[in-house]
Structure formats: structure tokens, C-alpha cells
Length: 370
Image (cartoon, rainbow, N blue to C red; front, side):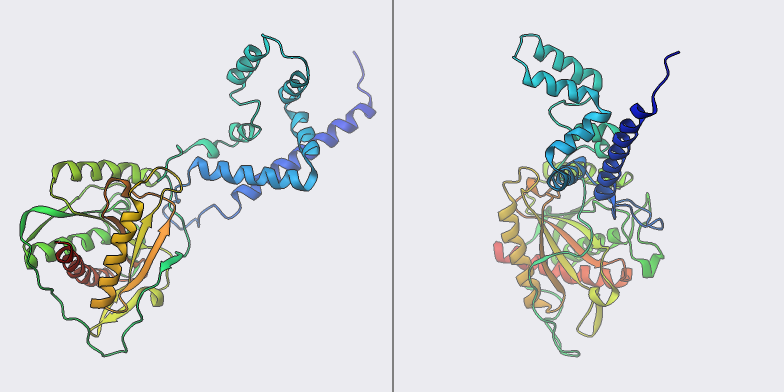
């Protein structure tokens, strides 16, 4: 039997060590801080595009620190096919090279010209969720683009509930739905989500519907469909509802996706309107940063009208407008908004109270546009 010399083992061990250090660096750089709290019943859905972009950034940073050649050497140590492809690229082109490359790509399940696909092959989480514009929500505090009006001093009355309405319609002019149907309010239900059930946000949507229909005589379509049985697919599911609502209601003018925030403290999400506690409201507008959304600027203009009317009628109720990179199904209408009423730290009653005020605001805007 041929004996392996110790001297030949040394470089191999060294190269393997370098490779594993690089893999660990990539892993912790990409995934550090992305795992949720174990007590959180839901994992925020993160698309493969998110991990792909993060992975590419990490590789670029590593390349900048240790040099392109050193990084290639590390990768080729454990991925001989990359070394073979490198050698072939330096040789005169032959008619058989594209065929060989295609076969290697198919057999290995990677792209020889894109080293990041090697990581995706070894880290399945990077490729588990389809890349879509609405595959995930941003987490953390919202960056408020349009600031709200200041709150009124305690005890000072603002516009009384109800607005002058000149519109009547037996066909829905407004539609409501909840992409994250299970979202609810911890101070009432003891949990942030009622998995597989209708949470407090559904009660808020129903209250908005009730006020607009009973007080103003304007029909409102309100979907009861639960969209977040699989949280990562919530927007894909609610998109079906949006398309159905638009198809079934030809006179539809406004479309609202009712949520609640998950990142605020109670102090940040609570106000008082006419002395009564109410949950603050944030309007979210999606853009075309991730995918085609030709209507987003019109939605932003609509959001400005709604926020301005809210500030005028109920100063302190609005948290302003946040512009985000997702589309949130707003690509289907010029008057579609995501509305976060309160946070997990509110009670359901506080959010429902804000829902009643929001209904008045919506009717006022609808009358302004008529």
C-alpha cells in the first residue's frame, strides 16, 4: 500500500482550514441576527433574493479584504470543478467547451461562472423561498417619509365624529382585507398572532366596514379569507383576494390592507382623541424597487391625501407615511394602501376605536374626490 507522507498532508489541512473559515465567515455574515426569537410564533419571510444579495455583498467584502486570487484559491481547493473551468477559460476556445460547461452545470446543479450558486447549493435556506417582490416584510422600526401633524394638547377637542357625506352606493366603492389575518393585540389576546384564526386586525376591518355602511350608506367589501396559514406566502395568497375583489366590484375606488405594527412600544402606538384612547395609524406605500409597480406614485399621492385629511380631522392619530420597497399588492390599483392600525402593544378596543375614526377619514376623502 502506498504510504501518505506527512509533508503532503500539511498543505491539504491548511487549505481545508482556510476553506471552512471562509464558509463560517460567509454564514455568520449572512445569517447573524436573522433568526427570530424562539418565543415568536412566526418567522418573518425572507426571500432568496434577500440572501442572494447579502451573500454577494459578503463575498465582495471578503474579496476586498483578502484579494480575489486568495478567495478563488480557497474556493477551488474544495471545488475542483471551478479550477477545471478556470483552466479551460485560459485555453483556446473549442466547439466542445460550451457543451462540457453545460453538462457540468446540469450535473453539479450550479453555475460555473457564478460562485454564489455554490453557496446556495450548500445552504438550502438561500433558495427555499421564491424571489418575488412581496416575499418578505421589512422588520424593525419604520422610516417615516411623510411626518404627521403634532398632537393636540390633552383635553382639547378635535373634529367631532362623522363627516358631511353626499355619496350613496349599494355597490362597494371600498374594499378591505387582511394579508396578515392572524395579527392581533397582546393586551387583549395575550399573543401577537392567533395562528390559523382571525386576529384583532379583522375586528378592526369589520368596524371600518360597519361605520361606512351603516353611518354613510356606502357599501364596503370586506374579505374574511385567512391569508397567513403559511406566513411566508401571505402576500401571494392575499393577491388572489385582491384580484377577486377588483373583478367582482366594478365600481371599486379604494383598497385597504389592514394590519397592525409589531415593532412599537405602547407609548409609541397610543394617543388620545377627544379624551379617548386610540391606536396610532401608519400608512405604508410600496414602490417599484423590487419589481414592476407603475402605479406606486399615484398610490403615494393618494396616501398623502388620506394622511392630510387624518391630520386635519384628528391631529395625533396619524404616524405619517412610510415608503417601502415591497409592492404589497398595490400594483393593481391607483388607490391601494397598506394601513397599520396600532401595534401589538395596543388593545383591540383601542384599535377598533381608531378604525371608526379611519372610516370617517376615508369617507371624507371619498367625498373630496367625487
